[in-house]
Image (cartoon, rainbow, N blue to C red; front, side, top):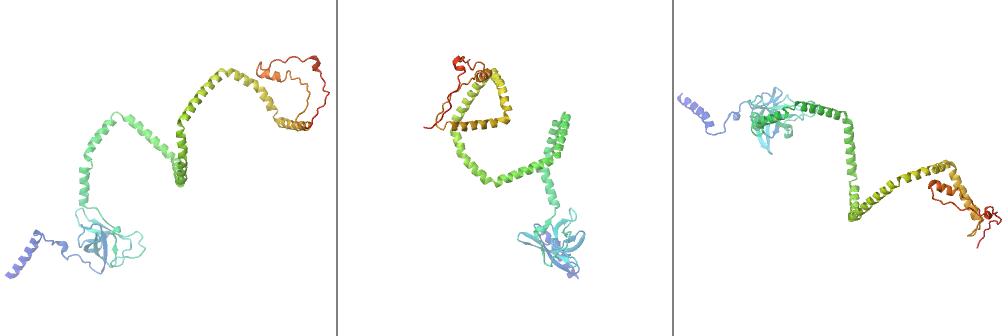
Length: 357
């Protein structure tokens, strides 16, 4: 009886001393709770990190436990979780796996997310849910780390300064800020009313950009061709500047002449107006008159088949051409001397004769 008590004492001492000696013995390595009652089939899952998941952890669909974690291994830089799933649970291809916590300080478990439309092939025993279909949910350590970063390294301590400066900016300027907000609201409303035009302009700009992109080779060739012309213009820069200076001087002189002759030009233009009115009135018959002149030229060529013609005419143009010239420009035509009495009624007795050499 004493020997049995000694054996029990030794076992208890070993169990208590094992954690204190740094050995890896813990409850996760005990073969308790790893199995699944009833028939099951194996299913593997790849995770980037499965450090929180214990061996023997639950595999759930919602709140229902459908499997257990039997073991874990590392393969190709991934944590492979080996599980046993109840044989009456059929998981379609596309099922996702997520490591979650039951409570902030509770045990981790695997939550299976079945596709909404499960129509499709079923995962066979021994299949693997790839890394792209798995994810690790947030845990307390990550949450505390994020909070620590927010409090220590994100400039949260400067919020008081920001609020103080904003208060100084807005102090006494409430009406201005209110007016600014009203104007901004009107501006945004205008943009919203014209969004169709803006979209149309953007579409047109997009088409223009596409056209320029399609014609980039032509544009490049045009720019290369234009380079020599720009070089010539650059070489002629000084002559072009001199020409512009001369043009400026010419414009100045022309303006001076026009200023000094404005009254005369206006008077001459007024006197030309009746003549132009007469030409305008001849509009319907002007073409016919010009055609008759051409016919007269033909008859004249017939009357003088050679290179000369003898003509003796008495034409009295006094009061016609002279009058017209004096009417347009006073004093432009001097008065004609009177004709001798012997020449005023000289008859034409010699007929027109023409001939050839």
